Image (cartoon, rainbow, N blue to C red):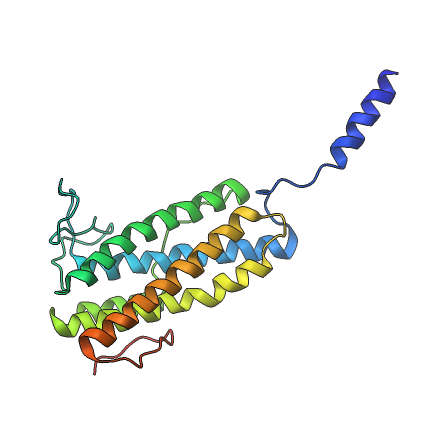
Length: 217
């Protein structure tokens, strides 16, 4: 009787579906790991890009709304004055800086919990070029325009990999699928927000991001 009961329990356990947040396997696992590393490194360059627009503060002002507030500086960089003069751009930069930090942390946790991998962010060549372009752009209206075009291109480069993620990750890996879907929605909406700013402020209503580094005109 005991052996029959044990066999029944084992059989029932075998029929249980895979956990929703269980990691993928084989080629799927390799894809997921590569995607998460890409996201971490991609978002890392966005931190410096947004710091250049919003400026950096080490402590947050107590006021809920403070148009002169900056962001926390990226390790390895000193204090940075805000180069954007448009309050909407500085607000977008502060918001995105926070979002990118949280998404980096989440992707690092996925890698650690699912695959036992610890990945520290590194600057990719494309991100480094965009940062250099913005560092060399004078503050004011010229920076505002270059930032909107450059950051739209930066967002654009993560859209295709994140769309692919939605159909190439493990079928039972719902946590990663939601993560990819959220990136697509937020990045797409911010691109269109920045396109609208380009149209309203600079009368550049036909801009479409290409993912390439935006040269100064």
